[in-house]
Amino acid sequence: MKTSLTLLGAAAMICSAATANAQQTVIVEETVTTYQQAPECKTHYSSSWRDNWFIQLGAGVQTPAVEKYLPQGDTKQHYSPVYNIGFGHWFSPYLGFRISGQYGNKLRWDFIEKNKAQMATVNADLMWDMTSSICGVNPNRVFSFIPFVGIGGTYLWDMPTATSNDYNADVTAHRHSQWMLPVTAGIQLRFRLCKYVDFFAEARAQMYGDNFNNYSQGNPVDVDLSAIGGLSFTIGGRKFEGYNPCEYTAKINQLNSQVNDLRGELAATTAALAAAEAQLPCPDVQVQEQVTVQGPMLSAVRFAINSSRITPEEMVNVYNVAEYLKANPSATITICGYADKDTGTSSYNQALSQRRAEAVKDTLTKHYGIDASRLTVKAFGSSTQPYAENNWNRIVIFTQP
Image (cartoon, rainbow, N blue to C red):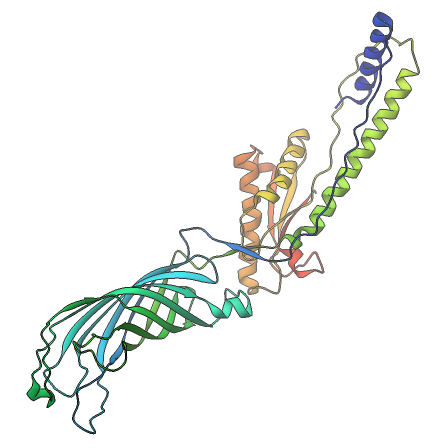
């Protein structure tokens, strides 16, 4: 930026306009008013579609709760094995969906030994992580309480043909197989074993019309109850990026301060231009050597919790540092990465701060063409906290030797 050359050039233009056209130059200053609206202090979560998928495998028992044609006093409940497989995806820390299948054999609903059927069911469930909704999101939570509801399809086959002699009643079952559409509801208890594996235990009730066992009598709804336990394997990692606008209040104040500084520079330039006008008739313009003035370098890049991804809002600070380095070819900087001490272990935070600093360096070199020899990376983890406010220490700070 040529400060003196700009002032003299502006004066020459005014002089020429006054001499040739005898016109007066009028300077109009535009007033800009900015309004700052208080942000909603609420954390918003997002994730990639590749993350938060899971596969579950389990086994347990099931028992039909249906009307029974039993002899007087025989009220025994019959249990049979059931096997489960499913997959699903969590859209957010609160809601997810699951497609699961169940297979059971030796299914019985009365005392007659030969009355054993086979059953296969596919369910589509909507799952709600009640613990995260009530207690807040915690990626390291061990226990979660998850209700779910859904719909499905059931195929029942190898159903026996009963006679009146079997039940001591005048009844006969004619169908050996049937399709049914159940409504399902249940509760899952999830226990985290490690980052990628959970143990789950769930109870499910599948509700059918009053013909599950080929007999319609009494209650209008037949219910098949099951209890299953097993393992759930997370695919792609359990990752949710959190963003809270209130964490960036200090950055907004810094940008407002820069706006005020620019207004001050504009006022100073206007005053200098007015002083040049007072020198009419104008002196001869002399071209002077252009002088490069070092501009201010923004000092930090903020990150979300447990993240080394540079957000679009923070990319402007990396851009300003790149412009500073381009305008000052001899300058070098140190990229210092940090992590807050209230989240994660010391070793994990050390690696996280290293990833944050490397992410900034990669952006400067690969995206903006800055020579890597001008950049030094240092990772301080959570052993050093540059700010007293814990959340402010999820940061990369630029320093100069």
